[in-house]
Length: 201
Image (cartoon, rainbow, N blue to C red; front, top):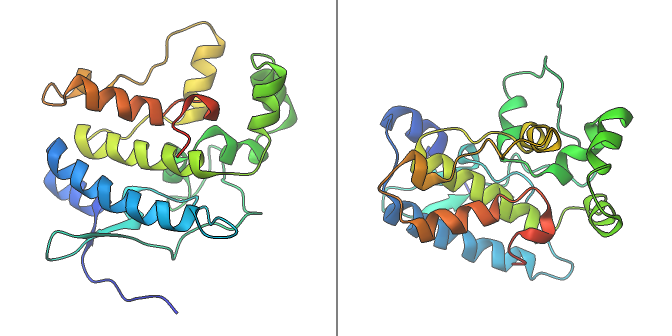
């Protein structure tokens, strides 16, 4: 049984707003979402949300946000990475870490990506989603909120970097000068491609 949550989701609010949200407002929302993640990640066994994105966060009348569960994916589901992905599925890629995209990639793409990984990183890439996977989704969501730009997905970023180019995802403070560099750095660490480079919790 799920609670009926009234309010607008942050994806619709971002479209309506048309400009970035202030980082203090976004940080307050992040604190609330992190409280929820701490709760589910510390359950026995841990629950991993796997679908954190603006569409799954609703803003209530009093300014509180709620992380929705109705479009969470189960452990066996895969993201569609094909170019003909339908409108409801393809936007999820922008908020998904590489480990959630991994199983839906063809063998050739997987081989190209793992060629740039050491043995430890490759083993970690193939492990099930964990708290760091949700941290990526939250960081991607915050990036969108404070820049009003959809983040470049992890697969596209990986391809750029495999070709020896710099990460094409600009830090938030370079997109929106109102974002403090320290806040920008926290968001970018949450958006690291390799999960061992993200925050542990």
